[in-house]
Length: 328
Image (cartoon, rainbow, N blue to C red; front, side, top):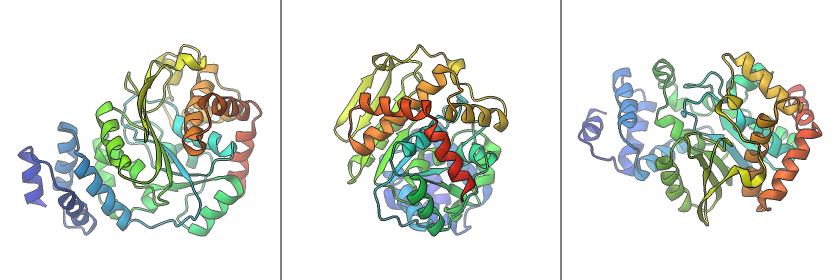
């Protein structure tokens, strides 16, 4: 481990194979807490390379507990780490997309740099985490959605979790989360916290035979925030989009605040699904979900947005989520 850390300290990139070896050493218990902290700190000081990210991703997918699903699915996931403490926009968008008929296999975890990650709010609302593939498949079949709590599928990273929690800031594992879904989804709707990482994702995913949509709001959000223009990367290219072209209300940062506790986040979450949230909260979720549906179906964004708005207003998404919670 020390030779790889020295290379990183000397401002050199790891090769793809070296990156694989680093996480293999961690998974085998051959790295101590100080070494793991040092590794995490390196990527707070400089960007991760495509080769490094690809190597880390490949070994985690090899070591994870796989979820073999023989249908096309999408993950709707943000990297987190934007330090904005928004409410759970990507998780809500996943549920809205599922209520629109899209098969969603969502991957997520507890929050590290925010009050409430996807796992926090779902657990609080009664979702029971499982790594039983039959149960996950049944949920997908019945409700178009299942949720995979990352620690149950990535035992290789058990020793890193406490260190991440103690550090309390984004690490390169935030970058990896959307790339290591154990279901290996055919489609990805990913929000990232800066343009540099968006370009790395774009380059990495272009090399693979899957559909993806990477979004980043230019004022720093790892989702479509509605607070300003956002960048979209897809296999066919990239573009800057203004939320105003979708007739979204002007959204301020405080409209997206996720609260101070998991309980606060859960109230907002339930309000959105029950069509009791503010217009700003509802519209942001509807637009993010629309991009997920567009990624999965290739329907025009305007049609997808109309569909997501209707699903929220009719409470169809709330009914789907209630049935999922009550029939696990």
